[in-house]
Image 1: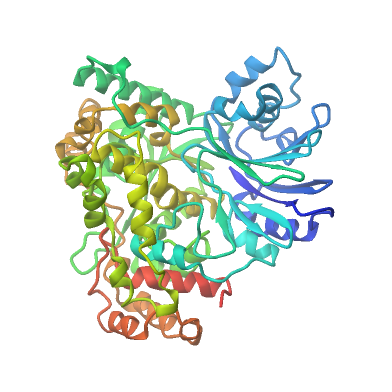
Image 2 (image 1 turned 180 degrees about the horizontal axis):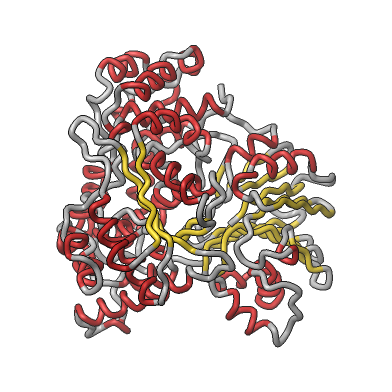
Length: 593
C-alpha cells in the first residue's frame, strides 16, 4: 500500500515535468510515510511514496527497475499470491528482492499484457516497457486501489489521489455537470471514469490502459464475472453453496494475512467483521482488533460495543475499544474532508478516519468487512429487487436508491449546472439492462459491486486508512469469492432479510446475538442529527462568500436546509445538508472556485 504518481508525454516530443511529479508525490506522504523515490527516462516519469509491508528492506523500494528486462514500475497495493508466482517464475528469472513489486515486473515480461490475469490482490500499477516505448496503467478487478488521471498540456498525469493531481498544477478544475448530477443522485457516489471535476478522470476497475507513441491510448477490460447460473453448479444444494462460500471466504481471509508486519482487524461487531475474526482464529491467529463508538445523540445510540466485545472475548483478540466524544467529532471533520480524494457524504467516513488514527498507533495493516453488503445483498434496497421481474430492475433500483430525481434537481441546482437529461438514470438503466445477469437482483448486485461500490465504501476505507499510513484489506472483495457468489442463486443471498447465506455460516462460529440482531450501520449520531459545532461549521461553509460566488446550488434550497438542518434524509439514511456541506468544504479546502 503506497502512493504512486507520474507523467507521460503523449503529444509529440519533450520531457516530463519532474517538478510536477515531485509535487504530486510529496503531497501523498501519508500514504507512504516510510520512504519516497522517483525515476525518469525519455517521455515518462514515476514517483512513489512507500508504506513498507512486504520486504521491509531497501530492495523493495520503488520505483523499481529491471535493466535487463528494460522495465520500470510504481505500484500501490498488495499481490497476495506473489510467493506462488515467484516460485513459478523462478525457473525463468533471478530475483533480487522478496517483494511483490519485483514479481509484477517478471510477470509482465513472462506473460505480456495478460500478466494482470495472474495477479490476486488489490493494485494500481504504472509499468513502463522501455524497449517498446509503452506505458501500462492497470487497476485491480474491484477498484480497491484508486488511480486518477488528468490531461495537462499534451501530457497524461496520474496519481493515487485527486488532490495529488491538483498539487501538480495545470488541471482543469471546472465542475463537471455530469459528475455533479451523479453526486446529488446517489448520495455522493460518482462512478468511474468521472469525478466532480471536469479535468480529472479515474481509470475504471479491471482495466488496463496502454499508451504507445503515436497512437491513441487503448483500454482493455480484463475481468467481469457473470451473474448467471452456471452448468458446473447444477444440482448444488443450499448446503453445497454454504460450504463453497465458506471455503472461499476462508481462502480470502488467509490470503490477506500475507505480510512482514502484523495484520489487525477493524471489528464493528457486525456480522461481516466478526466473521473475519472467527476465520482468522481458525488460522490460529488472535489479531489486534479495533472498535469505535460515539456519544449517544438525540436518542440515537452511538456504539455497538456489546457485540464487538462479545466477539473479541470469544476469540481472544487483543481488543481496543475507542470512545469518541462529540467534541472530537467536530474537531476532526475538516481533517476528514481534507483526507478525501473526492467528496464523500457518508457520515461514517469520519468514523473510519478516527478509528484508523488509533489503529496507526498499533498496526500498519488491518482486514475489514467492506463489500459484504454489495456482494451478499445486505442492504434494505436489495429486497425490492429480490421480488421484481428482470425488466423491472431499473425501476425498483431508482425507487429504492436514488436520492433525487432529475426533475427534483432543478430545485437544487442553478439552471446552467443542470444537464439536459437524466444522465444518472440513463447510466443505471444501461448498466442494469446489460446481458450477463439472470434476475433483477443479479443485475442490481452487479451494478452495486462493479459500478457504485468502488466509489463508496471501498474509496471510503482506502482514503481514511491511508490518511494515517494504514493498509486496509477487504476479504469480501476477493476476486474468487466475488466470482463464486455472483453465480450463487440470488435467493440464498437475499434470504433472511439479506446476507442469508453469510448468516448461516455465521451461526456455526459466532455468538447468536451477533448474527440475528437487526442490521446496524457505523453510527455517528453527531453527523446524522446536526447541531452544535458541526452545524455551526456547515452554516459557515454554506453561507460563505466562496459558496455564494460558486453559484452551483440554488440559494432558496440551501437556505431551506439551513433553516431545518435535519429535515431531509437521503435514501441511505444520511443527512442532505451534510452531503452538500461536505461537497462545499472539499471544494474550498482545495481552492476550487
